[in-house]
Image 1: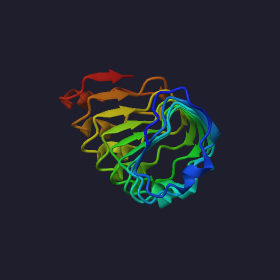
Image 2 (image 1 turned 30 degrees about the vertical axis):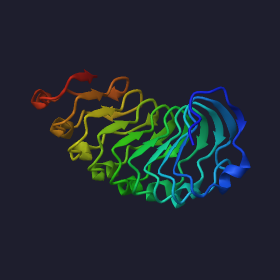
Image 3 (image 1 turned 90 degrees about the horizontal axis):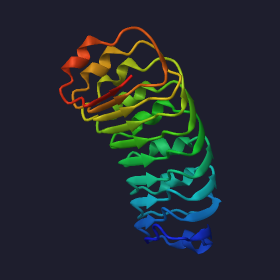
Image 4 (image 1 turned 180 degrees about the horizontal axis):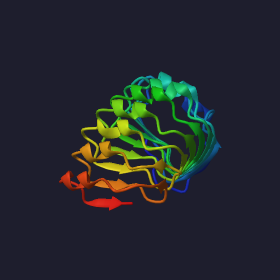
Amino acid sequence: LTLDDNLLSGPIPKSLTNCKSLIRARFKGNSFSGDISESFGEYPNLNFIDLSNNKFHGQISPKWEKSRKLVAFIATDNNITGPIPPEIWNMTQLNQLDLSSNNISGELPETINKLTRVSKLQLNGNQLSGRIPSGIRSLANLEYLDLSSNRFTFQIPATLDSLPRLYYMNLSRNDLEQNIPMGLTKLSQLQTLDLSHNKLDGEIPSQFSSLQNLEKLYL
């Protein structure tokens, strides 16, 4: 089902919740509205859904966990609020999770370490707070991490040094403090690192010179 980039509006028809055979669904770039927790059903065969650039509101439903084949969940640029339900972290099959540019709040739990297949994690542009969980170190397939423009505090976890495929990391526009951890200089595939607009102090690690793939460094 592909409805991308039209002028469609209003709520998603309730009949869509009965489409149990749905495999791919693309709704991006319209003006669909309604409570996102009530607009969709359970789709055992769904592997891709893009709800981005619409006017959905409400909280993410925990029933998405029952979509066991879902590898890409994209809902950027809506008005989603509330915390991310803990059931989302049980979706170990996810390859891409993009909830950026919403009003999602709360903290990220250490159980984020269950998303071992995720390669792209975009939670930027929300109201997330607390510590950046050290459990991110377990995401061995992670290539793209964007947590910018939130309210994260405390220091950058030193444990983020064990992400062998990471080429993009953006932690800018938070309230992160203390030194830049030496472990970031071990991210050998890193091409872009953005730590700007925080409250970091201390010296820039000289070992950044060993990052042969680094193209963009924003401090």
